[in-house]
Structure formats: C-alpha cells, structure tokens
Length: 393
Image (cartoon, rainbow, N blue to C red):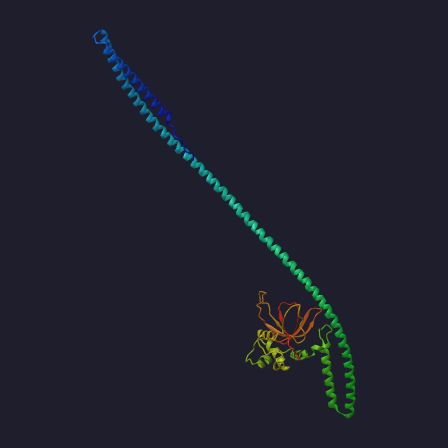
C-alpha cells in the first residue's frame, strides 16, 4: 500500500503570517507612543495643543490596546480554526486511508483468489498432462521392450532353427548310413542264421533229436525279436555303440501292460502303494545288475535320482545342446492346474529311442495312468526337465 502524506503546511504558514502582521502593528504602536512621549517632553506648557496631544496619545493607547486584543482574538480564532481544520483534515486522511486500505485489501483478495483459481486450474491441467505423459512414456517403453524382446526371440529362434536344420541334416545322413549298414548286416545275419538253422535242423532230424529242433526254433524266434527291436524303425537314432544300453530297454518292454505297480513298489520295500514310476526304473536297473555296479541308483523319489546323476556329472538339461540316447533316464516336471511349474521333478521314465528328424522322444514309463506303457514327447516339451545319462558297460 503506498504511504499517504499529510499536507498541513498551508494552514501553519497562514498562522505565521498573521502573527507577523500583529507584531508589525505592535511595533508601529510602540514607535508612535515613543514619538508622542518625546514630543510631550519638549512641550512644557499646558496648552490646548498639549491636551490634544494627550488626547491623541490616550486614543492611540486605547486603539493600540484594542488592536492588540483584537489581534489576539483574531489570532486565537485563527489558531482554533487551524486546529479544527487540522483535526478534520487528519480525520479525512484516516477515512481515506481506511477506504484505500479496504479497497486495496478487496482488490488484493480478488487478485489472490484469481491467482489461486489460476494456479489450481493450471496445476490440475499440469498434473493431468504429466500423468498422461507418464502413461504414454510407460506404454512407449513397454512397446519398445516388447519389440526388442520379440526381435531377440525371433533372432534366437532363427539361429536355433538353423542349428537344428544343420544337426538334423547331419543326423539324417548318419542315420541313412547306419540304416544301410544295419540292413546289410541284418540280411547277412539272417542268411547266416537260416543256413545255420537249416544245417542244425537237418542234423537234428538225422539224429532224431526233436528236443534240439525245439531249442533251435526258440533261438531263431529270439533272434527275430532282437532284429525287430533294433531295426524295426528306420527313423530311430541307433548305432552299434548303444547296444549295451538296450538291456534295460528290453527289460522295460517286457513289463508293458503291468497295472497297479505292486510288483515294483513292494520289491522296493513299501508296505502299501506309492507313486511307483521311480520304483519301476530302479527295478529294471536291478534286473540288469546296474544298481550293484553303480551304473543307476536305487531311488523312489525323482529328486534323489536327479541329484545322483548330477553328482556323477551325468546330468543334461533339456535343450538343443544334448540329444537323449537309448537307455537315458528321462525326468519330468508337470504343469499344475494353473499351467505353472515348481522346478521339482514329478515323474521319470526310460528313453527307448530318439527321432531327430521329427524331434520326438519315445519312452517306457511306470505309473503312467497307473500302468507300464510307451509314451512319446517332443524334444522341445517344456515339461521335460532333463536326462540322466548312465555310463553303461
């Protein structure tokens, strides 16, 4: 608020002027009186002139006294009026100050209210704009991350696909070579077996040994069964080095169709039924004397089997760097009802063969629908945790 100046100099100056005039009048009267006294001293006779002079002197003294009284009265009146005017002027100034203050306060309040409204409106808009900007930024970041992620995934899948095609081509070539060799060997072995069987049959008949004939026929049947087992599927990935692995597969095949699994869990030592998939694998290993030799552990819990293979450095995670072979022990982690996995193995089986071309795994498992049965899975199935790869002799 600007400072209000009080203007009172005009009235004070007027008062000073009246006092100066009165002082001058008083000085003139004193001067006149002195001159009259001087004149009276020079004139000693009591003449009419003296009387007139005295009269004039007395009149002048009276007038001087009256003039002083009048001057004092005027001065007092002027001073009183001046005081009253000063008081009124001060009151007017205070009233003006109050009005100005009230007006300025009201204006200031209006300005403040308007400023608050403006700030509030701007703040709301700014906050809303900031929120929208933040949301757009988040969406942009998410979109960018999604694009980057999809690009990485596509690149990774492309590399994987190229590697798979290269491996599949190499494996297909090898499989063709092996199949050709095996076919030739099978034909030769079959011819030799026929010749030997024919000779033995002729000799047995000549000697009248019908028991020998029956034995030969059993041997031929077993040989045919083995031939079918090893060469019945042209797409199977099998070579001669995997022959020792087939023993546990043959034992497992002989148990297909068994239901309930009491044969396996009771052998393990349980008095009542348990989840018996691991007991089945252990039973098959025991039939091959693999447990005593330390090739496969005796286990009833899948986690124990995994830990054993990891300690022996014979564990392989599911992935493109390892393809399971005949006789591998395969472990699973099933999805729950929400489609999630807990990282703990739920099931185990025995790998019988691998189809690299079509990327499939074939197994024999116990306790699959509460029986022994053959199953097939994709090599990329996420429910496959990995493989224990025993070192068969």
